[in-house]
Length: 483
Image (cartoon, rainbow, N blue to C red; front, side, top):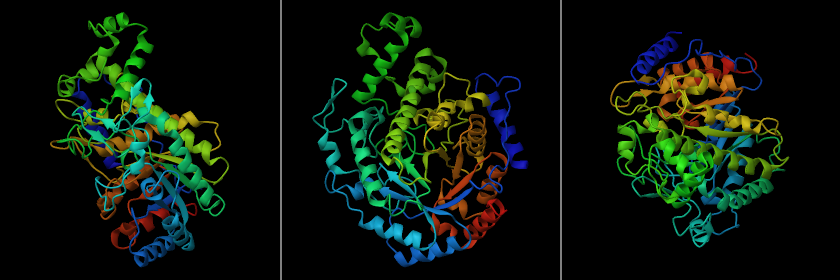
């Protein structure tokens, strides 16, 4: 296909200039092809509004998408809305109405257990903060020798700012009971009523419901698109975890100094980069042992966080919603990939890639191996765990200022998911992408070439009329089980 050929050609030119090792002979892409074509596991979903306010329009859109074959509606179940008033006091009235309205239209449900804040990110037209009692409840708790205080559950960035959008993964063991309580309350409210209609339960693992750090979010200055973002590893819990992880790896401070070429006198001197800007502009993040070790820990911490929360949700759901898979979302962080000074830096600050592996190798998923293969940590379990990847509608823009390889990245993820045997579904990153033929052409190409098995469109109203409706209907007719 023309676009795949172009994307791979661009990739070859980019990698030639990054200074990293080239892929080994025979280490080429493995395009899975159109695995969704006629596949009974193919799914075509839509996202509901962040909050329904116009119920008549909502019902009309549901009728439209149900009419041309959409399967299910993805609905954010906001923690802050349901349990915001008081600890262990749950208000399900709004979701009772939403779920009844969706299923009355003949559509299934794909709820998202949204343990993150709504508001402050691209496309957000609604705000729901995390429960305000959460921060106070744990302020006096000591965990791993650290007194948490009022910001102890929050990420702290290289700029010294705290994010309240989601709880940092290094505090998982402190708050896991909260996730368990919320999941149990959801299961008790809807487990019998919608036992068959809930076809997937998605789990929020970070900001915007994505498995990432809040590296380009509003708590920091000058870190939004298309910058490198900011590292989020400066909280006391994060620093403590880094120190313990490094000592486990090397066994002693003397061995740490030998590996890093340092003269640290105390374990307390082990920490995240003191000068994060120099860490990237000097390429220490990929060219030094300290840098590779730090990024490995940062990425591994994110993946381990994802596993802990997913396991808690799976165990808490038990046998309820027996037809439901478990989904997690990984964002397409596609900018700064070809940056001439610090290539792929934003993927590092968001925690998505390792730099201790060959970033140019298809065998390592171009650094995404651990993120993609998180799903395989649940092999043999009662439920399939499915990866959702965004940015399917986007083009490559490898030049300034974005330095983006969005379309190439869609292929990298598809290829590695196929190699790893991971079920892969896709989303568009921005609403405008499904309002243009070009965006749909890119989505079609991802499915024709890279093995995506399902699509969730952001948002339902964008495919309830015009180009979005026409192209989604044609897409479903092509890929649905009757095709």
